[in-house]
Image (cartoon, rainbow, N blue to C red; front, side, top):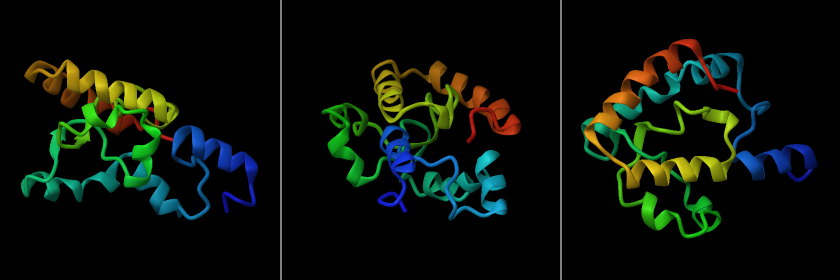
Length: 131
């Protein structure tokens, strides 16, 4: 699909997401808009594989595009929510998201985690920043 559509390919290269992904059904769009598709990740938190708050989980194929920032970001377990999720979500470019994740790791505090958890609630309830 990306090879046949240069506009979508460019958009994917910039955001690493497609806001008009034809593979996503109406139900899937609803789940994504309100982050309900993230609920299964709570099992990963219980198993200790993820944190409630942290940088996003990156695909192995994305590491080469992180300009060395993966060495900072991967010091911390990925989170179900984080700074970029409450700062624009899908409206941020890949570079902006990685910069926010670096900021989170370098400035981590319990208060920052509490702040992000509180900010996540209205972000999810309103679907703010969702594509």
